[in-house]
Image (cartoon, rainbow over all chains, first blue to last red; front, side, top):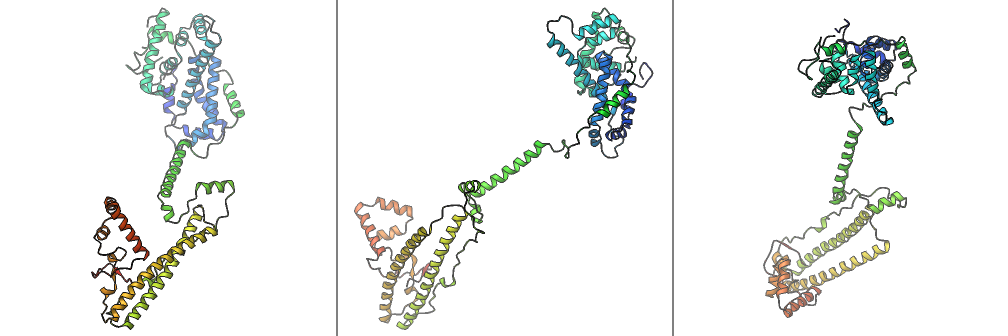
Length: 203
Length: 307
């Protein structure tokens, strides 16, 4: 359980053992099944996307794209599942979690690349700096600290700290092996503490 | 917010209640905008349907694996076929191997009309008339000698006819083999000239044999007329005692028992005049100018009728 008293994403992902019928209905182009998926996962997926991008509209776009990808690939996913395969280990929440994480990382990289290449002479006007300044103005130090991290370190902190995923699941969500993920997480925590110290805080 | 990060993995976890944890928990995640679900459903319904799945699962047999197996198979068959063609195995099995010229002619459309069906290779059979003539007893009278000569003549006539038949069969099969293999086939004129040369060579051989047999028969006839009984050993000439090499000549006897390489070396080591004399004598003997000497008295198992 997280601070709000609701089941965490980790609990939801691990506990969802009846996703195969839902995937079968999605493969049969059942819009009701998609609506159920939205009701089950959209809020949590949106939370991850927002923590990553600090942009509500961008986060909604990411979640919508992830859901549409699920809609498109549901027949292929269902074809890979063995016949009558209930409890085969396929977790729809984990699949969506991975897609959202990767989409958010891609968007952050694209934004950084476009900013650096199109406006190389603009000093301190990248979205990263803007986000920091905006976060300070809003009084939200958390967003500033997260936004100061590189994309993958940001994802590691969001998945493990905010979403309370075990390292193994977070590594799977980022398509990494566990050792590489733990190294990434270590660097992310170190960077976070340094950024917090620079803001005058004491970790 | 409870921190459930694994202790000691990925560095020191962010402890709950710490200043950093409080700072990270300072903001509130906005909720999804109203109608988000409806927009997603509408976008999904308006979404273009994905392409149907491939008939073959892409993960099980990738194109490269199948292509590699196919390439290895084709290469293996090509190598085996090339080896068989190079060693003449296909020719021995009467499987036609077209030449590059024939293949190109078939591709270019200039190939001649192929025969309907290649005939089976002609195999010369050994006729029963080639059996040896056995003497069933001694020959004491001229009548018995005449009977023996007639029997030998019948066998010789049969052998001559069979030899001519085998020659014709070999010529026909060779021409057919060349035609199947796409090689140059002699024209009717060339074939006629070839047959004439073969017939002339055969006639020369027969003439030499007839002369040699006639001389041999005269000697035998004289023995019978003088009342001497002829035994098998007296009629049959051992092969190694054939009168192609004159007897009594120690050089010929010595050379005859040598291997071809030793004989060639011995001839080269001879004085020039001696070697020339030996060669001239041998040629004269082969051409029949010098009468054949008397048969060797030593019997041999490796013998055949020489009359």
